[in-house]
Structures are given as structure tokens and as C-alpha cells.
Image (tube, rainbow over all chains, first blue to last red):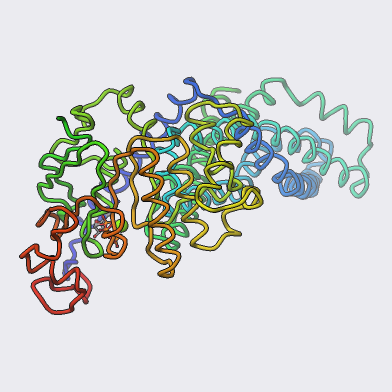
Length: 263
Length: 256
Ligand SMILES: Nc1ncnc2c1ncn2[C@@H]1O[C@H](COP(=O)(O)OP(=O)(O)OP(=O)(O)O)[C@@H](O)[C@H]1O
Ligand SMILES: [Mg+2]
């Protein structure tokens, strides 16, 4: 290392390193997507991943949605009551949950669990030469390991987010009717009136994209990890950080594209 | 006759670190070559380059006269379908029971029916001295010696014509090491396979080799028939086979 490091040099170095990383990640994603269409297909591995991602994430995603929906209803009620507009609670809750909080919080929670687990598993397989062993046994590690994980996440996340949306709205409903004294029937009616099909569609599209990101980040960092246990630990952390940043970025892009020119 | 495996001028660097410098090797069909050499001299890198797990920076790797570094996907697949590899750390799949590890190449690679593959797996496990009860265990439940044996069973499961052994005896007690050596000799004899092994265990090398080559500083510095290794006239080889600390080979004890 140079003792008198020039700041411009450092910035240049970091920029180049990040660009190289983005390039490698994109190439990995391209390779994975290209491998999806070609046989052999590992159905059993796919089902196993759907089970691991979906079933095990359900409690944490459900609780997150429940508490968030409830807190949201409380806040909007307090804010709305200043203008005698308590009746906006159901509408704002459902829009906020379905358009943003359901997919984003669901995606982040699943990323914390799943990206790290994938990176740890594939990373261990890499450093113990199990991935090399796959190749010598005539099995493409991309098709056997990466594709089932990506497909499973893309399939499972929309289902999880759908459940999260429902539970999130329920959380608002429980607080709204039990604590804030809103009328149960009109709460449900306003919710239904406010919600549009396009909201649900965009929510599920976001979820699918986030699923792709979650599995991609986990697989990528695991697949290229090296340097023993320490390397696997680093891969796990990097997978979660990458997934978080890409999810938030993708969310922003999709939100701007879908809702950007609505009035 | 074309050699079964031939390396011509293979070089490989990681970053600025040149690991293999112009390695030339050739193994005739049915022969067993053992590469000896100190830790970190590039023995595993040599095998991984032949397998295509690493791409050499230059040089050719010929299998039955065909250059694998330029081979089509199909030729590469055909090559991989006909090899077996015992990894240094066994590299068993820890999510699968022992029999599925052994049968993996048969089920996923060669698309055999599970029941048929299991039968073959049990038979191969028997060949390496493991009973059917072991077949249902997971790799984590096995001792290091048993894992090596399972790795050996997996390497020979597809009746390959080329087998690679990366340090088959490291980390084993001398008796288990000898058991593994005997198994290797026996399996190779039965299959008539060509083998390339790596070791720094001289007892193992003497047992399984027809020919021995020594890798030092990224180059093959000596090669000859097994029996001629004691009269190699090469100071490096002499130092290595007698395990002496002083001689032309200077161990790097400090960090590089
Ligand atoms: N994928 C890799 N990336 C970077 N460097 C590597 C890689 N694989 C091997 N090396 C380096 O190449 C050198 C040779 O490694 P190799 O594994 O071939 O040694 P070896 O001869 O098999 O040693 P041992 O007897 O300890 O197994 C080492 O210095 C190692 O650090
Ligand atoms: Mg090695």
C-alpha cells in the first residue's frame, strides 16, 4: 500500500472495483437466466428450495406485515384526526402496504434469511470443493445449484408478499376497529374501493423481481467465495448487503416506472 | 501410440503468482503416474487444469490426442463422463446420504434409474470395504478415512477410464493409508484405468505408481520409472524422498 494515498486514486480505485463487481454480477445473472431454459431440470431441487424459502419465511414475513399494518393505521389515524380525516385510514393503509411496504419489507426480511443461507451453503460447497466435484460428476453446477434457487425465489416471493399484504391490511383493520373505533363494515368497504388490480399486479411483479435479486445475491457471493471459513462469512454478509441495496434500488425504479405519471 | 493424457507447455498464474511454468507430462493408457512435490507447488492446480476446473493461461492438454482447452462442449462432456476424481478433502455432498454421493454421477450425469444406481453404489461401497449400513449415513457421520473411501467409491462408480487421485492418503493413519493404497491399486487393476495421482506420501507413491514425476517451482524437474527414483541423481528428488530439511529445496517458512 502507498503511504501517501491520493484521494482521487482511492475514489478511482473504488469506482473501478465496483464496476468490475457489477460486471461480474451481471454476467452471473446472464449465465443463470440462460441456464433456466435448457435441460436437465432439477425438479426435486426446485421443490426443496420452494419449501425452504416459502414455508420457513412465512412466520417472519407474516409478523412483519401484521405489526407494520397495525402501526401504520395508528399513525395515519393520529395524523388524519388533525383534519378530521380519520376515514382515510383504510385507504392509506391498503395502498401503502400493497404498493410499497408489503413487497419491500417482505423482500428485505426474506433477503436477510435466504440470501445469507444460500451464500453460506454454496460458499461452503465452494471451499470444500463440492462444486468442483459436481463438474467431475457431469453435473452443471449452474443448473443444479443456481437455477433451482433463482426459480424458487421468483415463484415463492409473490406468494409470500400476497400473504404479507393480506396480513398487513388485517393488522390495520384490527387496530382500526378494536382500538380506534372505526366501523368494521365501512373499513372493509373503503379498503376494497381504494385497492385497484394494478396495485396488486405491481406488488407481485416487485415481489418476483426481489425474489430474483435475493437468490442472485446469495448464489453469486456463495459461488465465488474463497478463503475458507472466513471467506464464507464474508460472502454471507456481502450477499445480504447486495440484496438489500438492489431490492431498494429496484423498488424505486419500479415505483417510478409504474406510478411515476399517475395524477 | 498417442498417450492417454498429455500436457504440453502448460502454464498457469494467479495474479502475478506463476504457479505452473511450462509443464510437460505424458501418461500412456493403462499407466499410473504419481506427481510428488511439496505443498503449494501446484499439484492440485495441475489436476484441476486437466479437468477443466481451471483454464491454463497457455499450453495444450490432450486427452487421447484431442486438445481439451479448445474442445467443444460435447467433447468436454464426453471426457467428463469417462473420468473419476478423488478430491483432496473427499468433497462429499453433505446434504446427501452416502449412497447418493456414490451414485450421484450415475443418477444426475448418466441418468440411470435410482434403484439401479443404488445397487451399483452399494456394490462399489463393498469394493472399498464399506457395508450397506454405511450407505444410509450422511458424510458428516463418517470418519476421515471412511470419507476418503466413499470418495474413492464415488470416483470409480462410473467405471471410468481415467481416474485422478488428489492426495488419497493425507490425514490418514499409516494403516488406513495402506488400505487406501491397496484399494487404489486393486480398483485400477480391475478397471484397467489410466491414473494420475498426487501425493507427498512416498510410501503411497511407491505403491500406486508405475512412473513418478516431481513438480518443483512449477516445473517437472524429474520423471522416471518408480524403481529408478532411488538412483535419480537429482538432488531435489533425493531431498524430497528422504524428507531432509537441508538441501537445494528451501522451504518458505515465512509468509510470501
Ligand atoms: N483458485 C486459486 N486462486 C488463487 N490462487 C490459487 C488458486 N488455486 C491455487 N492457488 C495457488 O496456487 C498454488 C498451488 O496450489 P495447489 O493447490 O496446486 O498446491 P498443491 O501442490 O496441491 O499443495 P498441497 O500439497 O498443499 O495440496 C498455491 O500457492 C495456491 O495459493
Ligand atoms: Mg493439493
